[in-house]
Length: 156
Image (cartoon, rainbow, N blue to C red; front, top):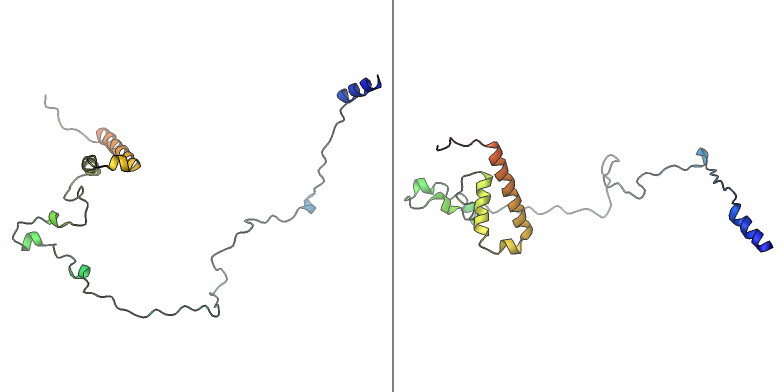
């Protein structure tokens, strides 16, 4: 019977527990901001001299003005005026990608041309993210052109 009384007493009687925080303002330590951060910029005036760590002055070597790249720079600038006329200046743009070469148009037209040329290659499969970005940009420009540009008179 006594055991029954103690179990009932334990289940019914629960003492109230108060959490006492005895941390006062005087006991607080200084808050160290950015703990562990080391400043990489020198803010102490003139730069310090570190002994034994001097870098040698590099030896002067003049640039070769007659390298092939520098010597032939601009050789085809006036080929259409001074030459026989059978070579168009667009044909001399060797370093430009083929889908940009000789195109005069807005970004939309250039991207359409790029899409047309790359659709036949393995680019959509090999670079799906680039292909998707190209499609998204084309869709955006298509919608923008349809909303913002004026159309000509209707043929009716």
